[in-house]
Image (cartoon, rainbow, N blue to C red; front, top):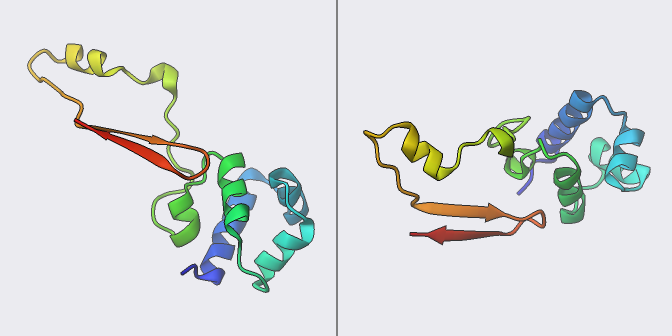
Length: 117
């Protein structure tokens, strides 16, 4: 269950980090201004739709951190252009043979697929 006080403080942290007021934050994620006001005041609890809008607009917000404080904010976003391929990792150190054990693909709707060797 979400602790509303802690959730509110994490939403405020995201707003402060990105320099948004409550009104501009609501506009940015596409919710009514009253919705964000009610969540920040503790009157209403956030809906799943609200949470998904926040995490889809702000890629640096980890859903686990937002919901229960586990993880970090801002989350580490991997830059595809600087990430070595598995082959490059193997070739970079010929003494170590690395094999892929599992690949997890996360989708923007909150679902994921896991592929194991």
